[in-house]
Image (cartoon, rainbow, N blue to C red):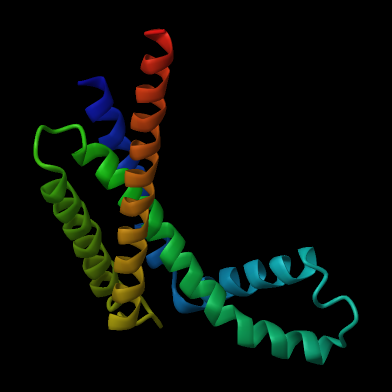
Length: 162
């Protein structure tokens, strides 16, 4: 029971973070994306030998990629957390995957609809697709982790039987 409550709380925190980011007006959202892009490029020393103008042009080109990767990554975490919770119920794994993907994708749709009501933002089908792919990736990562745990447990018990 404690595990179910903990996983629900983690999902609620994830949803709150997504909501908070989506609730930013366009200028705030753009500033955050630009700052993250600048920090990544500086950390990787990509803009070291560039003029300010060249660096600005590069930042503008890469910023959209960073924004979409942020969508993907955030929803990948969501997919992982949702399946982590759904996996606690006694239903077939195929249904767990479908339920998890549906919940994550439904939240992506709600998130994009929410953005229609935020100044300067828009809801985009493309973002729902990216988010949905992120959810599925998170689900697949957790499935892989669970498979590895099961394999390690199997080999450990084989070693104990010797």
